Amino acid sequence: MKHEGRRQALGFGLLFAATLLVVAPVAFIVGMIVAKGWSALSLGFLFTMPTDGMKAGGILPALVGTVYLVAVAILFSLPIGIMAAIYLSEYARDNALTRLINLAIINLAGVSSVVYGLFGLSLFVVFLKFGVSIISGALTLGIMTLPVIITTTREALRAVPRSYREVSFSLGASRWQTIRHSVLPSAIPGILTGAILSIGRVAGETAPILFTVAAFYLPKLPHSLGDQAMALPYHLYIISTQIPGIPENYRYGTAAVLVGLVLIVNIAATIIRAKYRKKR
Amino acid sequence: MSSATPAAKMEVRDLTVAYGKEIALRPLTLDIRLNEILSIIGPSNSGKTSFLRSLNRMNDLDPRFRTTGTICLDGKDIRGEIAAEDLRKRVGMIFALPMPLPLSTFENVVYGARRSGVRDKKRLAELVERSLKAAFLWDEVKDRLSSSAFKLSGGQQQRLCIARTLALEPEVILYDEPCSGLDPISTAKVEESMTALKKGHAIVLVTNNTKQAARVGTRTAFFLMGEMVEIGSTVKMFTAPDDKRTEDYVVGRFG
Image 1 (tube, each protein chain N blue to C red):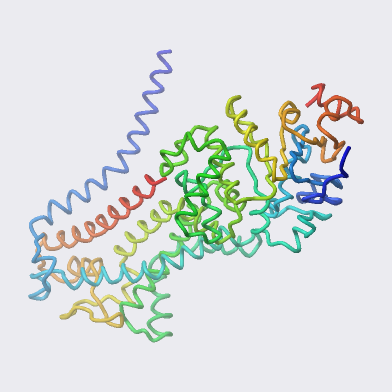
Image 2: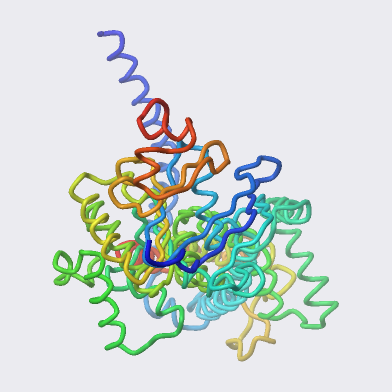
């Protein structure tokens, strides 16, 4: 009996330690960023242009650029990803072709982001002549997140009980009506999880925007989707490695804004998700 | 006997069902008539549910499903002359387990009507009241129509599902072991509503419970291993069946 108790304690301890190992680095990183960057954070920092060779002033253009990129990328990839997932999960028959497509999607999720960057450069910037612009960068980021959105949406659709579909069909609903009114409402929390993951990734990635949109420094804010733009992750990379003499709190402040931006979007999406779950 | 055999609402002719290579139902011919309850009894795996799900083409959802023979509703072939969506509105189905959708009680009942494009609030409200009354549920839920259907008890959920099917105003109603998960009181209420609905409807009841078939069935068919052994009036089937296997089953020698 005593022996069993010791085992129980050991098991609990191991699992708890593993969880701690996951949480600790995150807490440490966020804590360090906030501690070191706190003194730089102010409304002026967020909403003014950089001055003095980016050694002073604010990060407005990078912030605006990232917001643009996230918005356009998600507007592009979320509808396409969801529609593709609906097709694959609800309409497509299980044959060799669909299995191949599924395999391809899973593999796409593992392709390194710099490959997406080069792909975006050759397709959008060069071949389609969009140039180095927000639209090229956003489309590149959008394509990068498609596998995540498709996979999570498909899993969310699969998790909807079969009985919901059966009941809907038995009440004379068509396939699309069944999807629209019986399946999708239950899958929305899961679909939002995919969207949350994608937004975080789009906001934080550097490699895909390196050749497709990101500018070292721009004196003006972007006016259209055809303009180049600065972006937070690239800006952070520049001020951390390319320009000597940037104050430490300025660099950590920029990192804090990037982390904070993703956090705000995630919290908003989590609230929407919780609301949908409660409605059930 | 004063009248001839009543006209058939649905005519099943030489129907077979298979899933891939597995045969579920051997050639079978029978009529489904208005104003009566046809009970289908038999042990599990005898093809009862396969038969029932052929009548409203729910089997079509299974990609391995194969069928031959014909089924006609009012003389029209249900596989050629009637769209599956229309057929399922005319031939409503109630499943073995209560399956409310994650919606309010009200929205569950009007699900079919809304998909058919009914928007008028007054009409929908009337439909809900009428259907819930016919399913013997109205008095228990009339004050909480807008709360989630999941909050109802199991027996209430099953009667809600019956109301939801009745709201389609079907001509034929298929019950697939509707009381298998219910307590005796809920079972009695379901049977009561079924008997009341007999008038004006054609009802097919698949049941594992031979006593239930004896209680409510007008005619009874006995299925065994994919074959319809015998069909006849319920009284005859339970007192003097032609086939030895039927007798063995109804007296409980196997099953």
